[in-house]
Length: 474
Ligand code: BG6
Image 1 (tube, rainbow, N blue to C red):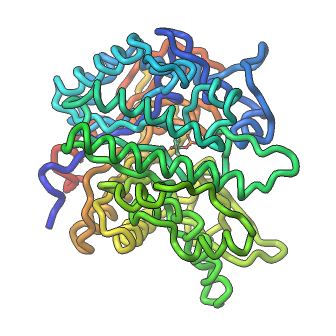
Image 2 (cartoon, helix red, strand yellow):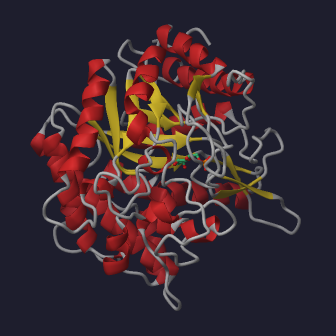
C-alpha cells in the first residue's frame, strides 16, 4: 500500500529556535532564553552551570531567532507554496503564562497563536503543535525548581486547558513534550532542573520525568474531554542502538541502551512503567513519588500516536580502551564504521530510519509520526542568496525512500513526516545559524547579523515535487 492520500507532509520548527520576539507581546523570561552562543552553551543547557539571567556580553541567538514573530505570514505562504499539509510548531509557554503560575493567561500571547493557526487553516495546513519544546518559564525554575516539583503538573494543566479550549477546532494534533527522553541528558533544557551537590542524579531525573509523564497523561485526558477529535502524541528522540557485534555482552548493552531511550515512551504508550525499569529502581534504592491516582491516570490515558525525531542510528558496545565515541543529538554512541557523517559528526543512516520505525511500531502498535528528520549542513548562497543544496536533497531522498518502504513493505502505520527546520533556524545543540536544515535560506549569521531575508533553496522545489507525488518522485 502506498502512502495514504491524507499523509501529512510538512516541516517542523520550535518556538525557542524560530519564533524570537522574546521580550515582545508580554512574553516572560524562559529557560530557553538563557542558552548563549559560544563555549558556555553546553554546560548551561546540560544544567552543569547555573545561569538565571541574561548576561551582558553574551549573545543569545534564540532571543530574535529568525523572527517568525514578525514574519509568520510570509513564512506560512512559502510553506503553502511547497504544498505543506501540516506544519509543526511549538508554543512558548511564557507567552501564554509569562511567569507560569498565574491564574489568567496573557491574551496577547493567545492571539498571536490564534492568528497563526487561522493563517495555516486558510491554506488547509493542519497545525501540529508541541506544547513544550524545551520551554519553561524561568519563574517556575527559580521558584519551584522546574519539573522536580509536583506543582508543575498543575501549572501545565492550566496551560493545556487554556490551549485546548481556546484552539478547539483550530488545532487537532498535539505533542505533550518534545523529546521527553532528553531531560535525562540535558536536565536544564528538558526539565528546568539543576542537580544539586550530593543529590542522587537518577532520583532527581526520574522524579522530574514522573511529573512530566503524569502531566502528559492528564493533558491527554483533558484534550479528549474538551474535544474528542483531538489526537495526542508523545515524542521521543529515537534512533535504534545496534549492537557493535555479536558478542553477547554487546548485544545486551544495545538492549539496555534502547530501553533507557524508550522507557518513558513505554509509559506514555502502554500506560505503565516497564518491569525492567522498576527493577532498576529497586537496585538503585529509588522510589518514585507516585501518589494515589497516578497509576490509574497513566493507564487510562495513553497517547493516540507515537511521534519521534530521527537523525541517526547509534551503536552500543561495552567500552574498551581506544574505542572511538561520537555523538549525535547529545546521545553518545560508538562510531559506526559503515556510516558517513554530517559536518557535525552526526552519522547518516537512512536504513536505520526504517529499522527504528519497525521497532517503535512492533513495540507500541500505535500510529507513528516522524516529526523531525533532516541534515544540518553549511550552506553557501550565491550572490542572489540561492543555495544549491544537493547534499540535503540526497539525505532526505534516501530517508524518505526508507520511510516509504516501512509503510509499503512492513505495514507500519504512519501519519506523516515533518522535516526538521524546514526553514533555517537556530541549532539547539550549538546555537549556530550556520548549522542549517531548511528548504528556505534565512540571511542571518552566527553572531545574529543579516537581513533575515528568506530565499527558497534548490530543495524547496524538490520537496514540493515530493509532496505533490506523495513520496513517489524523489
Ligand atoms: C532535536 C530537537 O533534538 O534535534 C530540535 O528537537 C533540534 O530542537 C534538532 O534543533 C536538531 O538538533 P540541532 O542541535 O542540530 O539543532
